[in-house]
Image 1 (cartoon, rainbow over the protein chains, first blue to last red):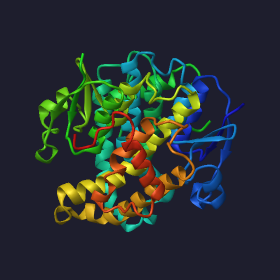
Image 2 (image 1 turned 180 degrees about the horizontal axis):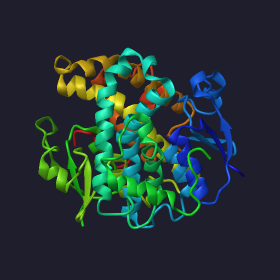
Image 3 (image 1 turned 120 degrees about the horizontal axis):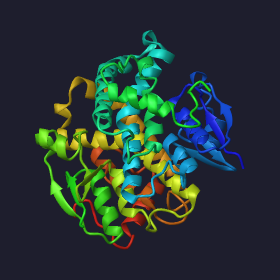
Length: 204
Length: 204
């Protein structure tokens, strides 16, 4: 049964899942939605795909799995991308939760606002949030840089889902105006991820 | 080796971990920090416990595991609180990621602002965010209510970490001004969680 990815292709959250499928040698079908046109907020989408009105959602038969990092976990569970060691497995999830709490709401959101919505189209609340999100996104990149200064991968000594989930929005952070020049260990890690056997770019 | 929980007791994120330990029959040592006095932003805390400056952190020997839901996963991995079925295991994580993205930043943050910081002490950005967070928190409770209308537990037919992680801030949502009267299925589920063998309250 081939999983179906309900997605919006430029989203890093959707790309994570395609990258995980590629690196674990699994095929997925792709079904695109125009989020700018509200295609994930229709009554049909809310009733049948995700009551939360968001993509990505990974469909397995007649079951639907929202939340990008959960979908990656489903595809990678039992592969080398999920560490065998209990502490390392939890530590991988630690970085994935950190990504959704401290990284994505800043780096992905600012990228979306600036490169897809357009700065001139932001509302008053979004404008008020922009400085804080820029500072928090830069702080997230510095925290990653400090962590990577002494190691090649986020957890243990091999790539795991933590790397893939963090890579998705980090490698396109400049599209949100976040400079990668000050974080050389992050740039070196990006180059390492791109060298993993089976890697596919976000545009694939 | 007894795990050490670095915590701030009223935090639901810290309580989740104590509840998971209690329900799996594990002892933990507790070490408290006054977050209002900046005790998790000291140079020593940042260097030795969590570079992200946040609690909870679960310490296992000389290793530190930040992120509440990752710490719960570490304690519950291999127990009945983590489903054996691969889809259900990922679906449990789906709700845990949803909790950190859609629930905690609204329900927990507004509770913190109103009951611990005080509405009069909020800054201009926090005031601008308050209406959106109130609406998003209420929407999160409605989504939970719809999901629970036809089932007793979030995933499968038994309590899992998804229930514990969502319970932590939901059962004290009224401290943030979120009404539970309109979500009867959530109230019934709260009562079920409180009946689980070994349950401890947030004040324990």
